[in-house]
Length: 293
Image (cartoon, helix red, strand yellow):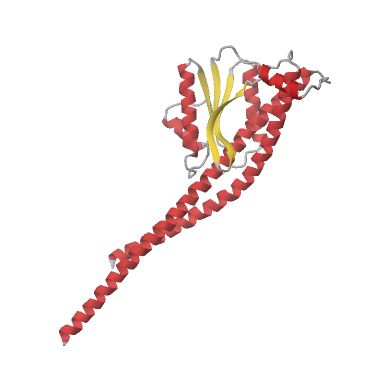
């Protein structure tokens, strides 16, 4: 009797956990769809503004901008690590933190100083355990990052880069490729990569249009490039948000399926134990009746 009671209690506990994981799966699915729509829209905007900047830079080769200037020697860089505030999303955070750690070690081996900035409680707790002190931490970026939240951060990075306080800005995040594939990456978002000679020639071959700039190319780039950078950084946060929801949805779906399997296995054990118990009781009754005769 004790064994069957234990199985009943265990099965009930697993069913309660299954309700939680199933609910979290449904919530993550709903959030994923909304986040993916925002990411796809932002990707189209970011791609187009990058193409415009590339065409303008290629058409006005003699024009430069501080955000396009690549430093001859990098001595100090910013590394922004974008993780989640919550767990239960599989290997999402682990992959990003692995790439960030590798980037930190690589920069250290090159003799470069890295200013670490962390977004998300998981990143903060990880580097606290590693006894690595960040220069800034952020926990306000949830599953719906807003442009007005990212813009002050982008302005700070632009100011630090233009003033010469840092030579590069990197971002470690989960890059969204499609719903079935996301990869942890460390990308350099400052300085902007100016189109190389082959890319410029390709643009000229496909488009022989000569541009007249009004106002000047310098003024256009001065307005366009900061906006392009802000859009790129915002896209990183959107990619991170949708990838987190995908990771959580997949993890909770797997947990729900595992709970179903465990419930079936425990139910089978319970039925066998109950059958053995009933058989034993029947045998005892028959034996007792035979003894009375």
